[in-house]
Amino acid sequence: MNHFFAMQSVHISLPTETIFHIGPLPVTNTMLLGGLGVAILLALFFHTVRQVKRGTRTRVSSLVQWAFEGMYGAVYDIVPDRKMARSIAPLALTIFFTVLITYWMGIVPGVGPVHWGEGPLLRGLPTDLNFTLALAVISMVAVQYYAIKVHGLFGNMGRYLINPIKNPIGAFEGFLELIGELSRLIALCLRLFGNAFAGEVLLVIVAAMSSYFASVTLPFFFAFELFIGFIQAYVFYVLTLIFASLATASHGGGHSSAHDTAQHKEVPAST
Amino acid sequence: MHTILTNFATAEATGHAAEEASGNVLDSLGIDPKLFVFQLIAFLLLLWLLNKYVFPVLMKAVDERQKTIDESLQAAHDAEKQAAEAEAKIEAMLKKARGEAADIVTTAKDEAGALVTKAEERSKAQAQRIVDDAQSTIAKEVIAARKALHNETIELVAQATEKVVGKTLDGKIDNKLIEASLNHSGDKA
Image (tube, rainbow over all chains, first blue to last red; front, side, top):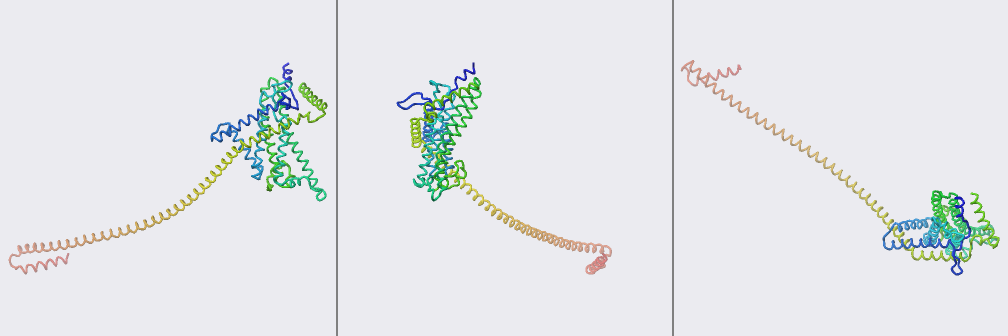
């Protein structure tokens, strides 16, 4: 009976659930929790900014400053060109902190069990493909923007479109590079979504399986998901920086693997 | 466990059914163009907001802190360099002072040795002079004592002889006899 009761809370759905509409725009459960997460993020940042301007500090502002300083410093470690690093840092940092806070918001106890109609009232924003796809598109568009800024429009196109009569192998490589850009976009989008969705399912399954012992088993998985959330945010942030750095480094640098960071760092950024 | 799998399979089946019904993969994944555009705009808005009001302040704070750290490191480096220079200078001064002190000590020892030698010589000379004076005084006193004894002896002998011999001899003969006898006795002695 207890087992059956626990099973009633198991609800797994790939698409997000619409809670209500604002005009033609459906407001989903991921948007509600995502909005809450972004509001908390803004509150934390503006509190920190106020403290910095006053020259005072609190534990919260110190924590935010510590996290910001660490991630901001890492931008310069990943992108060799300081001017480029300073330029792309806001995007990368916004991605990192947004993914981190919205991912962690989805782990907060009580988010899943509270239902509205058929589905949960609140759900983690990274489990919404619209959000992860939007992030990936922005990231890749930004990469192309920086590449065009460095190489020029035709110079950047020359990375993908090479005359097959003059250089057939280069033309094939250019075509592969074009496919590679698309695969990077899809990989960025699905990696975050897949991990967040799998984490959500994992928590639901563990809660259902452990039934009344959920309060003992779940904290371990919450901690694990907190770690995964940080890793996912960091991966998205790092890959955005690496893709941008590769795209602006040199014509030959674009063929390097995205994970070959060490090799990438040795490639001087052309200006 | 069976119930979970059944439930999960039901959810998947529902998803597949929806996919078949709509015939659209994007719908089954939950991708909605309106929501996608909304998320895009919302994120860009957040980026603009943070880039305009938050990041410049925090970046400036980080840069200033970094600058302060760099300056402190430079100051520490300079201080370390100055300390090393001062230490080297002190070492040189100490070395010089030690050399001078050694010279002073050597000179002092030499001077002290010379003084001691001189004092010893002076003392010896003074002592010798005192001894000589004393010997001279003693010799004079001995001579005087001898003379006095000689005179007294002569007088005594004269008186004794006078009593023995009477008044047969005059004073001149008396003295000659006494002296001759004394000289005789002196030779014997």
